[in-house]
Structure formats: C-alpha cells, structure tokens
Length: 71
Image 1 (spheres, helix red, strand yellow):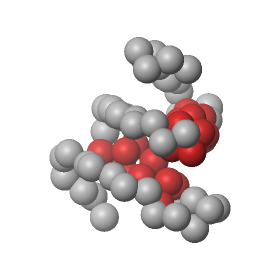
Image 2 (cartoon, one colour):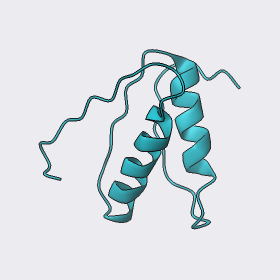
Image 3 (cartoon, one colour):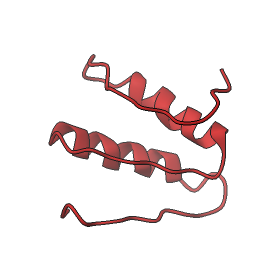
C-alpha cells in the first residue's frame, strides 16, 4: 500500500466490513502507518474502536476520535 492509497469499503450488514477494516488497520499499525477511518454512523466507529482496543498484542493503540461517543 502506498501513502496515497484510499479505500472505500461498503456493503450490507453482516458482510464482514468491520472485520476487514480491523485487519487493514492492524496491518498498517504494525508498520507504524497512520490511518483515518470515516463512518456514516457513530455506532460503526464505536465498534471499530472497541475491536482495536482489545487487540491480541496487548498494546493500546492511540486514537483521536472526533464526534460523540455512544458508550
């Protein structure tokens, strides 16, 4: 992946979008790359943040979240 790559992932509920985004972000984070994720709803980003904060490596990733949190 190049620095200028942009990805759009869309699809109906239950098709694995969050799982795919989690994998891409995890891979890029391991390479110390910065990632920006935009979602149409707070609940979508809440789920991505939750999955990333409970990663298998035991490290806490750094997040900057803009918008209201629904927890």
